[in-house]
Length: 569
Image (cartoon, rainbow, N blue to C red; front, side, top):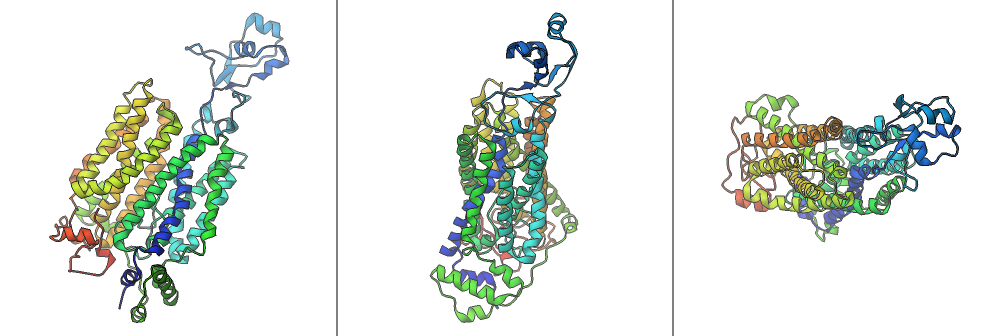
């Protein structure tokens, strides 16, 4: 009996059909990068002070300067306080001028902002003073939506198929993304952002129908901490070409960040910006007929005839022909069962791998989002900073391939994490009057964090044995998602000291990088099939040739099973 992997090879595992699917992922990848970071540009800082128009009732002819001098206290720096005012009194103007006001209170009638400023989240919903923390809380809620969506849409895609889930997710993202532009209250905004985050996971998760590919797994129905493209596309691509395709989608995501910088620079009204970033996703529906269901999923559900038609269509698009006898050998396959969560902790060597890799993914996510969400605080123009942050991810992704090939997984993972952490620690000591130095260092940190993420995909997949690979990578992914939720909340600690958040973002990856020293090297090694080994994988003699054709030997010899294949970078 021939497996679907063998039939895909005959049909062309990365021909014109697959390339069109990868190209189609441009739209959702651009949309995801917009929603991931758009809020950063919707809360620009503007001067503000308490609304003290109450004094106009007794002094209608007061100038604005006179009004502020009478009703606002000054701080130690001589500037008007932004979050406090003198308590209103029932006096006439002469009494106020003669005796002055002494009692202060928090702003009770809202705030006043400079006239002529484009509408922003800050000015429309008063995200200042006691409400300023809502900005970072809203970002954390969006991240929580990513985690929630991966747990909802993952099982759903296994039940009803990849194509329906992708279309549902695209529709929800467009609908609620557009709806955000018309919300009347900030709490409604946060709820809609949570739904958008969930829909992002529905689009970007990389759950494979058979859960067997070690590089692109999002096991246990949990997607990676950075967007890839939809699984329906991933499952049509051959093993040796999947890393290349995923890398392409990561570059789309980086380009999307650069486009966000230009879009937000040109559109300063936050509602119009939200509309401009949300509407393009609806263009995806013009390509509904092009987006196929996953043939692998159809086979696992016993829908063989449908799978055959799609495979023949793919072969025709790739200008290949499938022998009828090869298609006739296609039989229903049962979904391979993964090991349980407890299997990761039954063996001592797996305990170490699980705990350290979960920590690595956690700290990697912390430093990545810690830097990405901090573009407004580096002192340089936020639009240029965002442009640089997006641009630097492209060489980080591509360069990671050659770095892994030259130096191996363990050294690369450790050095990149330590580098990203040290950069953050150095930033804490840079004076505020040197924004260029700070931004350059932050860009270097973003480069290291992005390359480290790409490394962790490969490293984690090669460390976990086949039977628990889904579960292990899923656990790592979940730890990264939790870190993504915590990253914006850590920024709230800046109210106690401005260096605390960056110190945390720096020390965590340094610790994680040092822990990588305890892990085994996996470059050129066989993938373990079960949890019985009490030692690291042994180096394969044919590792070099295996890296070229995308296959390695399983423990039981040559096997045509994707669970024992990998593509070495």
